Image (cartoon, rainbow, N blue to C red):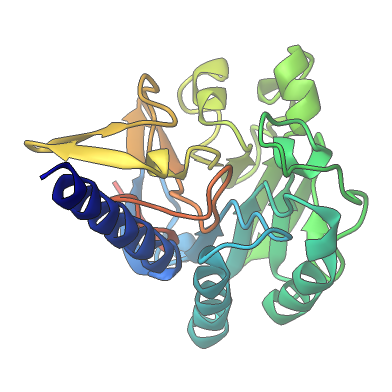
Length: 271
């Protein structure tokens, strides 16, 4: 009897591991309308693809998800590609990252995450090069102003180290004269550090939708981040919207359970 129970538990564990590896590569490609109060007519329909948390450099089923997401960007040809950190878990993934960034092209703007600095409890994490992502543009406590459809669009990127030390000043970097202001930060709680309306759109990642989750009723228990308020998808406060990406990669273990990776196309609409 005990042998049969042990065998059954072993089969269940093997099935869960197999499914977790599969789900890590089973990327969701989603298009979401985002209502922006006061959006000028010229920017209606602007398409931004939000990617996050590649975690390249370690074995994981998520390698398929990253590849498919980048291919989707190439198919969709959005106005901008915005990436919110944790590109590498280990420096050995840098050649692959360079290849993917070449495919994403110069319309890509990115910030870094804690794993890019090796600042993580993940035993596989190691610091990587983090000063140049060409042809993509790296924003480290920096901003850039673009002209899109004849309107001024400001992108502001926050360095994860200054954010965690409390020295980042995302609100002070906003240009009130820009027609559209977008803030990129790896950490979702940056949304609470700026007054509503300072940025019309805030993008973040970091949480992987919990990566390993247990569903119950209409919700799920996210084992990696079970008490976070912003976990995935859209949130609103006043004139600002936050989008938290479920990300594409994995940490600690190369699996996902009930937390599929996602690449998200955000289409801006007037509120």
